[in-house]
Image 1: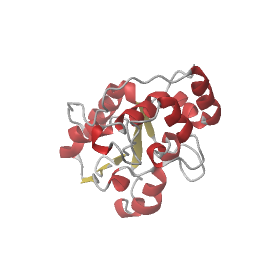
Image 2 (image 1 turned 90 degrees about the vertical axis):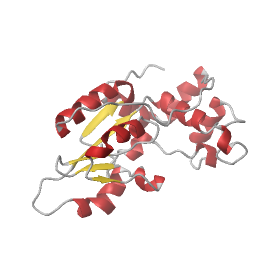
Image 3 (image 1 turned 45 degrees about the vertical axis):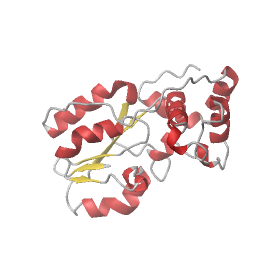
Length: 202
């Protein structure tokens, strides 16, 4: 999470959406950076509003605006699936090395997912207490250039974006039946994607 106090802006780091690369480019321009521990780096809208907003904002001043990047739901889940198949965690309860992508998505849809599928939900990350969208500026992962342009304009500085935290290559195939089930059982994820112009066709 990065705070640009003078620009009245907070970049929330939704996991697996390219925000690590954004943070690397933006870090020299940030007034405050929370990079660790991961639970604080990946501060949700609700956590920011409940725990941090009063710390960063002063009475009588304009509220800091929140921005975030989201990813197409199947692509987002596949990135988590590939990331958790890396050799460093092989044999642990977080590893997906021995499960199929269908099994990973099936587990993620459970009310209480097992550890390897416990990765949260993008829709909850960016939602306010009442379930409404809690960010002021929302961008697509596959159109990061738009987020960069917005930030360059807001911060009045040019940015050069690299690649960071890339998930290892691994074949990912989701069956048509499981994808249809994903649309049925997690509609809020696709509703969020549609807000940034994403295609909802399975």
